[in-house]
Image 1 (cartoon, one colour):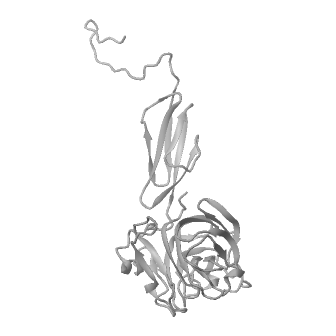
Image 2: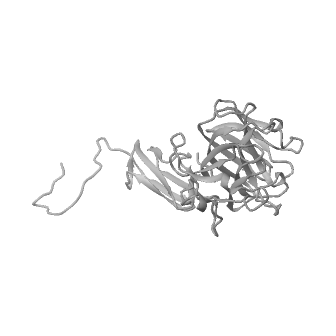
Image 3: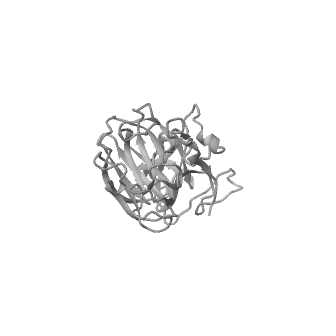
Length: 331
């Protein structure tokens, strides 16, 4: 019994009454970068084996990366069981790209425009062969995706017309970084030995007479989706990488095969782990490593990468969609 007694009068409070007594533990949380941590339940101490949920809340422009200390994980939220005093740190990394979901663009004209601040824009249209009409801000229902997304559609277009959906990284990247994006391949036109669409470039603007990443020597990452029997259905899509000049630009089948057995008409998540000093990158599709240490394009000589582009190409014509472009990558 606990007694509020008339003989000994006073106010007091009782909580956490255990029989037998339960060991109590403390939980200390900290952050690296910009963000906060919420703890549920929020107590000063916790009984042994109490389940506690930690939720990392990044600040605008930052991404949660990992938990470290007495608990290690990239999950968020995270559940921990209190069996000792614990100190856990949430690490946040500043985003290298902004507007991952294209929500900041009001309409297609806004997407195409290159604003004074960091954003997506169409970079090829003002150069020879540029055709900005191949890039649109799409809001159609594409396999359940009804939000804003970039549509890059060159199927049936002129062989000389191209559009780039481009963004400059927050800062030039000289070390190792990650980027992930969702891609949906709708169809690929039979275009001789090209038979590709969905080209992805990460590189620089060393050739200023063209758009950023506009020529092969400006492309550290040089990827495309290829189909030896181009169509709009099936599971025979491949990812190919052009890594040397000996792989003919016009013959995609000569490029390095990175992945195969991929499907049309489905959203795939591609993650790239780019190691600039080593001149290589790893390619994941839907969380599965497809190839490690893919060589950069041999003609790329710059010690950093600055831009990322998605290409609606006149050489390898097709239609595809891009959404959820994150750097650092979302696991």
